[in-house]
Image (cartoon, rainbow over all chains, first blue to last red; front, side):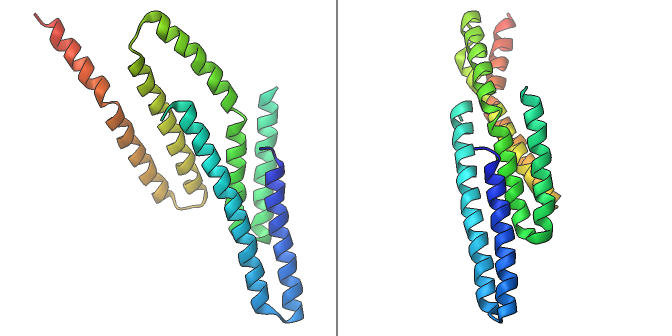
Length: 64
Length: 128
């Protein structure tokens, strides 16, 4: 639970942007949209896991 | 000390949010959420120490343990509502953040009702 998660998300964002450009240049626009969606879903799943972990710790801490 | 670490983390996170906003705007919210979770999880061990000390004090003075539980609940609810409302305001739709704050206030009111009733009983008891 350190700073590397931020860098991981940033890397995924930049990577999907680059892949988008390459695919767009190669003419495969529909695959580019799928790549964008895939990147977004991966990041969202990571975020949802972090949020659930946070809520569990808060629940235990404050005896909610 | 930890303060320097927290401020450094905050600056790095806001920098990443700006960077990601150009490359892929929809991920900037994800970076924001992840950053705020990381910043808060650094603080949690201090919370446990504080509550341990408070617990011993409460037991020493013999105040009803149930009241302390309610106070803890209120703090917890206040914190989570603050966390969510802050994120909503960051994304720009402040109206949802305001709704969250309102809901949090009402929840806290509902939870603190037993205290009000017990106070009322005490006052009634005092009157001869």
